[in-house]
Length: 484
Ligand SMILES: Cc1cc2nc3c(=O)[nH]c(=O)nc-3n(C[C@H](O)[C@H](O)[C@H](O)COP(=O)(O)OP(=O)(O)OC[C@H]3O[C@@H](n4cnc5c(N)ncnc54)[C@H](O)[C@@H]3O)c2cc1C
Image (cartoon, rainbow, N blue to C red; front, side, top):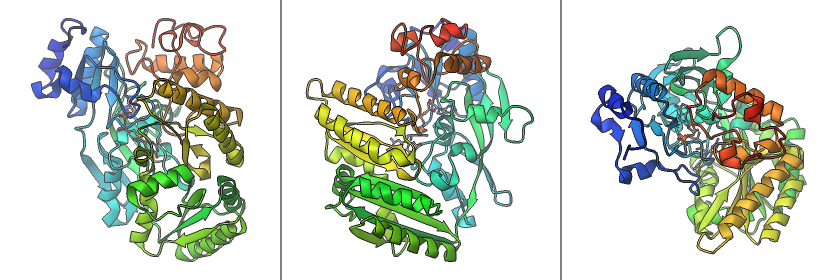
């Protein structure tokens, strides 16, 4: 099945790797043909199951020698098609690189391989009184390598920052096979900062040094139900304007409450149009004082019901519904499309109303679950793929939501990345000069355009001859007309 690969390439891989590290059968390749963005599927010509940095290096060197494109893959939970294979290329899976290499409590650092699951970092340091702050809802399975590539966020990133704020160093196999170490202690330009969030287009991370935080003295979690998202949004603004910085503020609307209840029975108030989960952490006295003020602010904004988690089990129950919200949509709709956009916090009510209008106009329900504190929306467009035209209508509606986010001064992605899904939406935010500059940075790392091609940037192949409002295609502008 590797007929599309150049002669000699497979032989080179066979000499460098064990036979059980190469997947070639169509049946098995199917596992790798998409990530969470299930509407896009491409079967790769071959998959390499790397077991060490040396395996990654040998594979990338062979790709470079034979001009074979490659796509890194962690757990394949990305929702933007970042790990979508290239038909005439290979996938390099990092899923077997799951060792925690070093735990240095004194320096609050952990060194891991890229295939370690996000939650396993916290599990490894919990007994010593530490935790790893970035907490995507997929944290039980998504990998640190994928988190770094996507600069992933999570509920607790409002207070503690995204992945980029917690990565101290990375070993990276560059697209020509050279292994380099990038770190926050390097002199010169912040190349680690450039690498984090580059979605597998600048190389493959093979080792990561992460900052872990001391577990807070106290954590308190409050659930407040409101009649409408407007009132819940006003409470969010009130909390932030009051000078309180919660660890997390999450919002769910009526559709999402219904789905979460059906899936995990989290005891959310079904008669409410919106719920907020507000979590406070820090020194006990400060947390108790802030909790009282948050309760007051919620009441002042018309909260219909307030519940404060009484113990860790209760807190877990409050979070269970939120963490399960995406998957729970399966309870209320056969299919759904997850959108990821950002708006300034003050524009939340207006944009939610616009989403309502779009939902009515397209005749499709939209559930909203989001990181309200930082304005990161996750509208879930519900549709039935068995009904002719609904999938296309869902995609159009999701795209129009993005336009609404950008028009409100926001952005096309908060945390799920651009990937293949939103490459054509980049012109909504960036002019041709901006993209040409980004493409030149990419070309400095990957002059041959082999690392995850077709992602992030609009290409004629992906988006038509002249995507967006461009007069000159940014690839041409950057002098890279036939690459990526
Ligand atoms: C139910 C659900 C909830 C989610 N919730 C959140 C959330 O709250 N916050 C959030 O940010 N995301 C969320 N996501 C999206 C996703 O889980 C994250 O983007 C995650 O970081 C992807 O990790 P992964 O290991 O699955 O990466 P993959 O999907 O395998 O890959 C993602 C990208 O990273 C690249 N990549 C993977 N490994 C490496 C490596 N070692 N070196 C270089 N590039 C690499 C790939 O090429 C691809 O471009 C959610 C997804 C699901 C399904």
